[in-house]
Image (tube, rainbow, N blue to C red):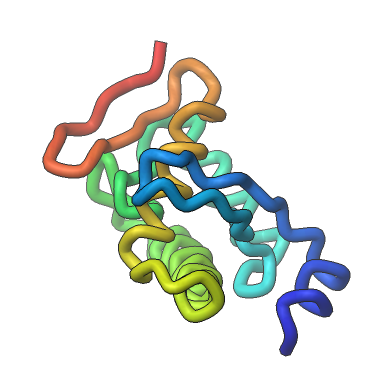
Amino acid sequence: MSSTLRNKMFGVLALALPLAFGGLAMTIAALPAMAQTAAEKAAVDAAKARGQVGEQGDGFLGFVTPSTDPGLATAVAAINAGRMAVYRDTAMKTGVTVEAAGQATAQQLFMRLPPGQFFKPLNGDWTKKT
């Protein structure tokens, strides 16, 4: 599926990457909806509000606290798979690495997190946003 079609079909939010990543300014799709259902998004959003799931510095979701809920684990995996697909697409189109695309998106996601939710910078610990 082309990224244009994907954006039209799923309303993917585009974010600008900071210039700090190699001086490259580009736009990538973040929080891809293509690999998540409404139920998966709702489960992850609720887990984020509870402090169980957070955003990581690599651009993927992670567990702040262990979960025994297989549905939540499946939802996190589905969203992360969608994000990986977007990061790969961005890397191919822009010449950055998949890792750089994910890390740049993470920085944007960190800024947009509401107070009380958790994030984990690269080489850092889980931190509750104030």
